[in-house]
Every structure is written in C-alpha cells, then in structure tokens.
Length: 99
Image 1 (cartoon, rainbow, N blue to C red):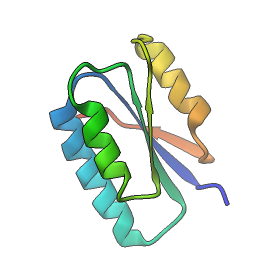
Image 2 (cartoon, one colour):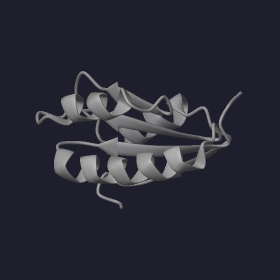
Image 3 (tube, rainbow, N blue to C red):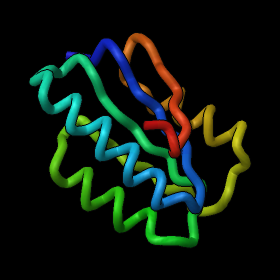
C-alpha cells in the first residue's frame, strides 16, 4: 500500500541540521504507528558525514529512504528527483534545517 504523504527533504552539506530534523520527524511518525507517511532524503553529493548519519537513522525506521547523488545536480534537479522517488499521493517539501 502506498503512503498518503511523502515528506521530501533535499540536503547538501548540512548534516548537523538534517540530523536534528530527522530525529524530530522520525520520532513523531513512529509514535503514530502509521504506514501513511514516508520520509525521503535526497543528498546532493554532500562532502560531510551526511551519508553515515542518515543511513544510521534510516536503519531504525522502515519509512525513511535515503538517496545520495553521485554528483551535485543543483537544487532544482534534486527537488525533481525527490518528486520522482516519492510514493505518496501528496509530497510535502521540508528544508534540511526545518524542525
């Protein structure tokens, strides 16, 4: 069954903020015990520890998916990638520093 909502988060080299945002989102969604929400992160080839941090969090939650671009696609293409990867009927974009 497809989720109703996809929370889509583009990111690039902001691991500190992204980790805080993912902690907030994942804890709240986990409390709902719902399959109606997914979270997807598209990493625009970050050179910091984004990949390690997101993979560690994603390992704990089956509703969190992570994609890492092999090169920086620019913000527009990164947003487009998220839309194409979203399984939800609705897509809600959040910035990597939104709590």
